[in-house]
Length: 470
Image (cartoon, rainbow, N blue to C red):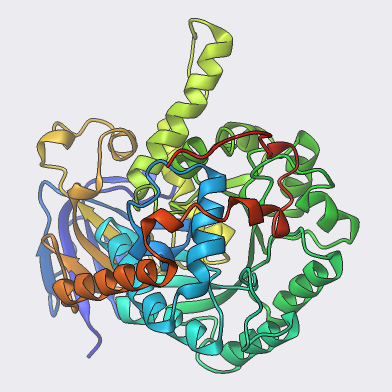
């Protein structure tokens, strides 16, 4: 008999049109799918979850996270983007071993689930061998999260013996597509994360063609600082390579023409407000992107420096945009960007951006039961006035009581299920200590600033004579 759940008596925020919200509703779930919604649904043959005083909402979707970096948590609280590139991309990433990637990815995915994130785009760009790829993938699979494993084509600062050329990385991605990630209906699916497009154009073009031959979504860092040549969007447009399968990350320095190109091609943007505001990547693009008609989503990005939950990301994106608009208007007569627009960015719009909009992103019959139960009876959410607005403006990760992924409870009454969290903590702590020891400790992390221009076109983002505070 299929597993059946009846969630009873909750305030249900569907994520679909607002008139479909239920102030006191039930959800019937069978074999991972929502089969009915309403009031007074029959509980015969069901496991019943009474939720009076609670709020049920779609699972959150994080469209950009470097999950492998979880062992580095807190190290980058005061890093600029150049500090981050020097410490993580140049110094630390080459010394990560497969077991470190597994620990970081598993712990980071569990952190996401704990905070109500049911689907994650894992931008995994620390793959130095097939064993690294397998370990990172296993971390996602072990966690219970739904994920797009965005296999990173970016090489490290030194050649990898396992991948002496880009074609060797392409072949490894094809291996995964033919094997454990052959299905487009699995809980973990394959995606591709492109190398920053300051490599020879022939390589970038080959990466895009490889991803499209695999039939998987593509993500890429884009216009996070002003470069000296054509933007990533412009280069892709020249070759006719734009499309709805592209998820551009950051775009803080994208011009109006590039935003129009993304909108017209059906592409999407993932803004990561916490890292962008801290690291000097410019103000989040959210307002400009929405006005240009671009589907816009949010990501947590770099957990080495900032938090790993989307409630904070929603508020930062909203209030940084409002603050910027208000500074121009003086005393504003209205706020154009509405709170509930941010909720859509981390639910249905995010699902659409990664090709999963038909199965997740909102709560309605026929869709997967990817959902979160919030403690709407807690002090910070009481009284619950406008539920959609309250989720954005007042809720936090501590309100996440229960989480379902494909109808399976992965967190219940505040406790992650099916995993020994203390063992995962020990595993990720060992990984942190091991990678720091291999590079000579914290004091060595920012010693590679001079090498940045070997790997990235810093363009107008370069700060002549800048010094690094240690």
